[in-house]
Image (tube, rainbow, N blue to C red):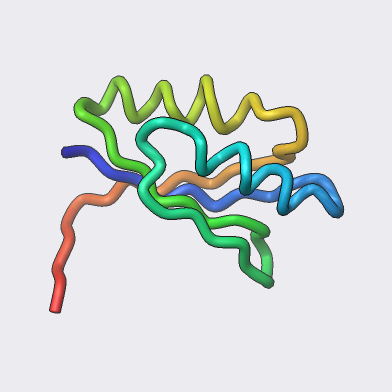
Length: 80
């Protein structure tokens, strides 16, 4: 299954609101509010690459208080 990590910058003070909206999006497996260059980190999983793209471009990036995103497509996973 295609997966991606999305790093998100929000409007100042909108982190909690955006995080709450993101966790309700189908395909979002994990979401974290963080300190640093980005405000939120999200792990997404979808049935196809096209659905993954749709979640990112049509659902996450179009949220009103999302300022910018950086997407990293996962190519390999290893677990301990």
